[in-house]
Image (cartoon, rainbow, N blue to C red; front, side):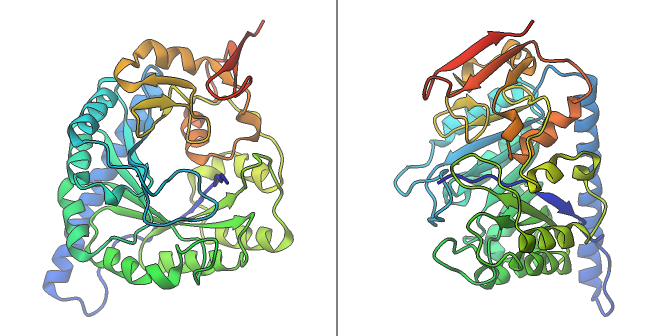
Amino acid sequence: MSTETQPVEASQPAVKAAPGETPFQRKMTARRRLIAASRRFRELGSIASALASTSHPYMAHIVPMRRCNLACTYCNEYDDVSKPTPIDEMLRRIDHLGRLGTSVITISGGEPLLHPELDQVIARIRKTDAIAGMITNGYLLMPERIQQLNKAGLDHMQISIDNVMPDEVSKKSLKVLDKKLQMLAEHADFHVNINSVVGGGIANPEDALQISKRALALGFSSTIGIIHDGSGQLKPLGERERKVWDEVRQLTRRSYSRFNHFQEAIANGLPNDWRCRAGSRYIYVCENGLVHYCSQQRGFPGVPIAEYTTEDVKREFLTEKSCAPNCTISCVHQVSYIDHWRAPQHTTITPGGHGHGESELVQIQ
């Protein structure tokens, strides 16, 4: 079963000194402020670069490890047998993303923390001048491991928490992970986002509000996602889900997502009219080193990252994807939104039009 989420971001409280802090704690708070300011400066630079030129990817997701230590029933992006991609090959793939001028490289999986040389991957991302992110289930985090991620140069971490108490659908629960969140609050120099979900298969949508409030209380940012099953159909939120979704959104009004109506359409089960720039501004590099539009459209274009060129980026920028109206993949949409006002797409492709690995390419007059 496959799922996708459409997150809506809540604010991250500013890092500030608390009453009764020791001099050492105040020093750590000041250091984190400097790190956060430097990260923000780099992020603004990446956005400026994206606005100035459309010939490079803004974001890439890369998978160093398809194996995961959990088995959430809704997930189709893992197995329990795969070996880690050899580190030399991972470094070559990162270098190719750097060659393309990729601004943000996010490590996903599977569970990336299972990769034995993950810190080298993060350091290599930073060496390309890209912003380094990671999506993890958080189970393997300990204070020493968090310090190692600090040293490697990680900029962003996202953890998805599906419920307050573990159930047969997901063990990514607040009960299990709260100690890990406390460790992150104490030790992490990188930005942490906690994502909760409502929608298909989630028994207690009210859990999302509790998770978001806990994230904000710890000084993290918070997002809420709308989850859908493997049918690929948009389903409007029910009354309970919609109430929770609105309450989480009201925690803050400062969100990139509020500049458009994408989330509102998803919540209402309606299609969106937008220009998907997958394969161009956003690319997904699987564990086999192939470039795909996204995790749910594997095989398109299916080109090794070592062979992917700026010309491929430019072609896909102008290629309309027929799956776009019903897409719920937030990161692809938000990256594409940078260019929503320019470059109408001249060709269209239907991923899966004739089965896996094939497509229809139609000229638009």
